[in-house]
Amino acid sequence: MTSSESEVRAFLEGRVDAAQKKDIDRLMSHYADGIVYFDVVPPLRFAGADDVRRNFLRWFDSYEGPIGLETHELNVAVSGDVAFAHMLHLDSGTRKIALESEVWVRSTVCCRRSNGQWLITHEHISVPISIPGH
Image 1 (tube, one colour):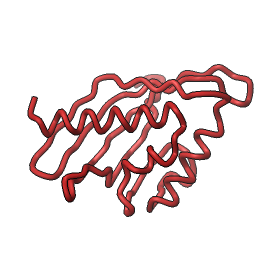
Image 2: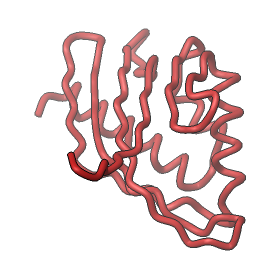
Image 3: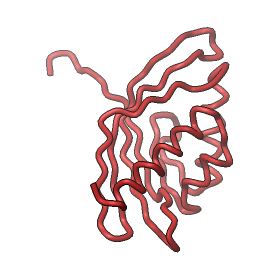
């Protein structure tokens, strides 16, 4: 593993830690101002840090306490100042609608290093589904 790959892995671990603790300012420090973020909730595409911040606050507010967020199968590729990562997350916790929930999500993250700092410029979240007969 290269030092750049290690940097990106640590960077992404910091992002997960901030989400688990619902630390919106720390979480947003991982995202570029011009972030384009695709999620599984309407409107599906969030453009810019303000939109993404509102979407994260909506997500945080849906949980009674901390969010369980475990990363699995993290793969990172780095070339120069660009990095690509894909992983699975197990998102769990107590929802405010009095429901214990656990859902697997897929995440693809694209990062760019500028002035020595990695920032996420694109993220895509999807939920795996099983279609009967396929």
